[in-house]
Image 1 (cartoon, one colour):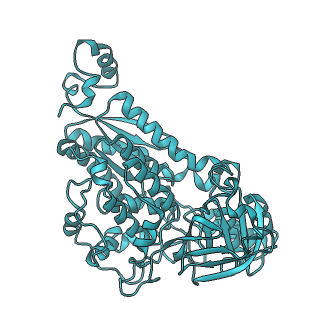
Image 2 (cartoon, one colour):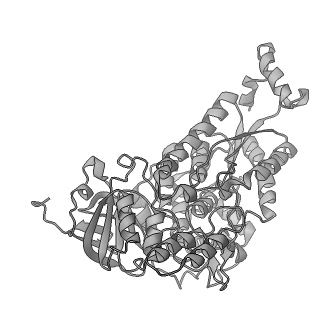
Image 3 (tube, rainbow, N blue to C red):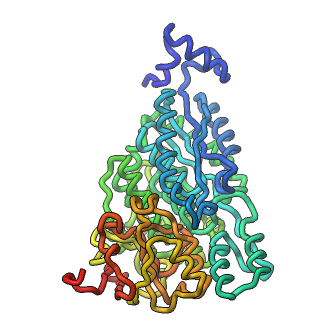
Length: 519
């Protein structure tokens, strides 16, 4: 098939374009080659994206070796960890769309033939995969890798969530200034994305499970030399996709999305996976609904003992064989669609057969018949408080039911002040409203307050309900994405201080215990 980049390289009328392309390094022999966009969200805003510059350069070598001409360009990324808990968080979720839009704009304007995209921080991963689905040109997604765990002087592992939780402990007198500073200094020792099964590592695992990333590529740390090998191989792989005519919408089918959901359920991934998978499905023209998450989650147990709810980090999953360990188990139980094509040009089943992943170690990843929870790590709830649904991370809680009195706050800031002021008690349900996509605006993440609640000792005996959303680092009885949101007149707007709220994770319900006439 004739490369579409010939729109800018072929014929006398394109002499001005060729003149400019010569200035970027193209020669006569390059004008007939496929032009491959190498899109990176590298920046110095966050350690998450700092590995990407070097990886993009290595990818370009792979593209060139396979006969293409790589053209690198950048897009933005927002640091969720740094923008957490203040006005800046309103820009976080919308940055996903900016990333997708900007990659689409460059690929369209420059008539590039294929795409390899690199991302690190939370919103840049789905943004890149959304762009790939939207432009539907041969594409490979590459993750920059996660940060190494920090180490407290007493030997325990630390990460950025440890710091958020330490803030809460400090506020109620649980730790002193020196201990808070120690945790702050030791939590983030290298570059790379937040190291637990938070949003970035959840989305990296989705990249593998959905077939848009090379097998086994999600788990290595950012500082691991294998990252450069993956980048190079991804450059070679995209040229093979171009020759074979395999496009993202051949890969991102309904079956592939169900594979991704199954992986998230088994890994105990972030609630943000629901938002991002729905957005990716929209771009891929795949019908995906909230109930698909409950349907898949009912069959897939939670198997990975990872942070924030467990003991281990992504580097520990890598140590025992990576995401393929989980995918292989799911395949053996008949819970994956193995005939789905991937960026290798082979099917998921063929990839797993070639990898021959080891069995689970039983500690970091449990065996299928010895799960941490019998059902998947996420659940969608409905009821009188959330007629159109809400999302809870089942992996982050140790009990199935909760009933308590509402403590109502119009916005996150007032609720945070109450937590830090030690005014939230056991049995309370903290209701934070007007934080949805419209009401916020921007649907801010709430790791600052959920971390503070955990640190203040309220992580296991109080709940939080919001029309906003949570970080992948959130755990505890936290229900987000309540719909309709308050600004749209949802029932959450009617909750009054002291009302009773009942949550049933097993029954998938969340109800405001007030009769309809009173409402």
